[in-house]
Image (cartoon, rainbow, N blue to C red; front, side, top):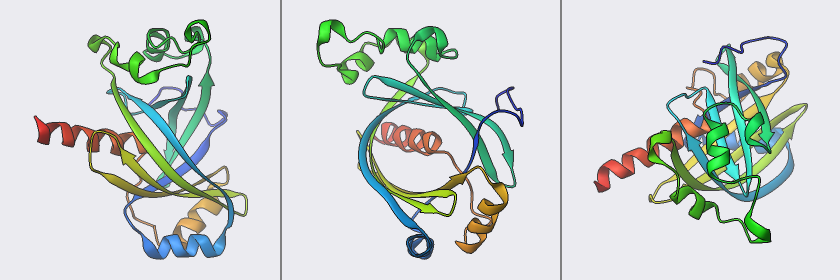
Length: 203
């Protein structure tokens, strides 16, 4: 875990489970109001340090860093990086290699092409996914139900998550949804395992 564990850091608690959880999904719809729905394509930049959750959307790098774990919730801080100098290692090098801050001469940025040119020595695993997500508001908390298509595989992952700043409210909501005791696993970790398993099968 990151050495930046600090209760003064601006961060949010997150709890994410994987699978159908039909009862929890229905109760979430009943308890919450629909915030919005979206479909997005992300490229996850996965390294051996699971305390960093990094992805590129368009030509913007977003990095979440794990600060602490409390009562089964993971506490993440996040930021969007627009220069290589501001990004933490090793993402500063990746930012520069991918030319995220300088799409060439007004041409449309081609992330897939940039990813294909990455030096394998960087030790990054780039995985593209498409997410179909329904977002909810439950009081001051956020909740989501998401289907994730992992490219280069036949897998569609199903996940739901709750997050927010108030840990007591989150603990109560987790109990109400019947999720207490379920394993909390971050998005990038499951995507990495799924993609790696497909590569092994096809090798």
